[in-house]
Length: 444
Image (cartoon, rainbow, N blue to C red; front, side, top):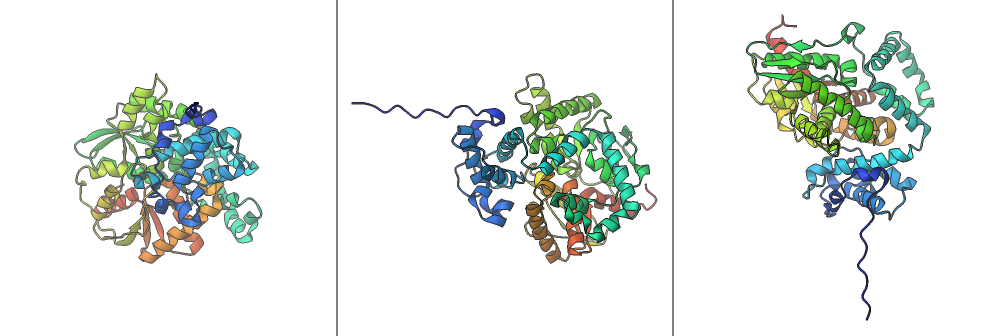
């Protein structure tokens, strides 16, 4: 009589897939609760474009049962990493960590298109870690807008002759602030009145160049609510886009630099006004979990990270607040709602503003299609999701859509222009700052 040998366990994941914790793959019970929350499954209805389908692919790759052919790579690349599936999952699958490990394997093998390689190199290696280059690019784009060349390029249709991502990138470009506003933010912003807390502020890379007004509004709102704000000069890009694109080592280097910079600032909390950055900062403990010199420091840092809406909602808002007569709706940024679990706080702040009528948005928590640089690397799907979002916004009758992430702001504004909708696209702190200004017209 012979006995069968027990099946051997799969070999340990190799290559970039070694980034994942294999037990996390086993948490998925394929129940399907994630399916209706997934934007790509909602659009395509295909199992490999659902979270559980992608988990199956990742596990097969990790087990060595599947080669990373073009079809598998396409299904994994089409994921937005919005993490809506994490909210729906009853088993607590950390899907964001799994898809980032899979993306690292895709990146190790290299993007398939020349345009994809160019986007990654320019954005991730060239611009985001280098503020001076980012400001130089902004100066060139400012000249492009003010010279009339932008109007000419858009009317001529010449942009449509190049890659779809090039036309998409140009369509996302908002009016850039004057060059005079491009200098460094102050190192310290004192509180107005009694000091409630000493906090650090992550000003961001793209956020500070394109949305400097939102950073300034954030600082004013924090100061009005008793925060002394420290802005470390040594802070860097948070590294979120690097991690989402499958480049964990540059993301870790940026994380270490930020941890050291904010530790030196001696702040009780680290305030962030960009949802994607905040979710990634709160994940520094996972990112550096295998680095013995930084793991504990990363966990301590991540515990101090707070979205600006979380901080401001912890206590009743300092007054007075003036009226902001506006019918508006709120779009939940994926990495605020799903990545950080922050949903009630932005709505509570908006509800405190006199004259503001807030109308709930259908599918408010579904991704708008921005997702970092997804709208550049996957423009077709990004446009489908944007069209879906703008259709729901129009149905509310709102004159403004409010959100809390720079990528969403750019995407929604581009969608409004493309659909010919007169729609203000505003950050939560921008609306709150309007209320403070309305109560005190002489304030700056």
